[in-house]
Length: 151
Image 1 (spheres, rainbow, N blue to C red):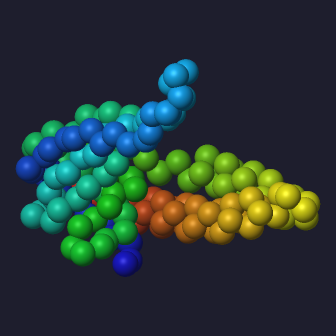
Image 2 (cartoon, one colour; image 1 turned 180 degrees about the horizontal axis):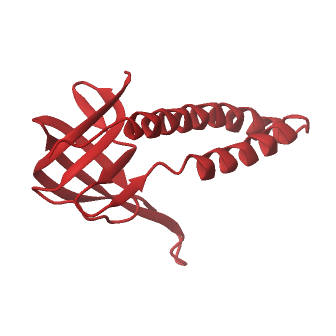
């Protein structure tokens, strides 16, 4: 599952909203529900998907460059540059790295307490996975910088 970069004209654009979470069982209605926009399109016939908490503007006929890990022939874009509008979406590696580092330091601190070890150890491993995702975003950003869109 390597990082792939692709550029060209967007076709077969579709957008959907994915909602997940739970509502509480109590009468005060506790729970958490979140949603994200999922975009699917093709560039040079290659399928691309991108999930985002924020809506963004890409349509059929726009020229884009995108990069992300490829799995089962589909690129999971971590960063997309719309060269038609001049806007880049995703790729905020610094913010991901800072929040993951803060969480990692808190988990390490918790490991050295009796009760906190029960929480700290699993959170430590979650942090390792988050660093992996940050690495994917960083590599995607590097790959995108090397892309020139063919018009």
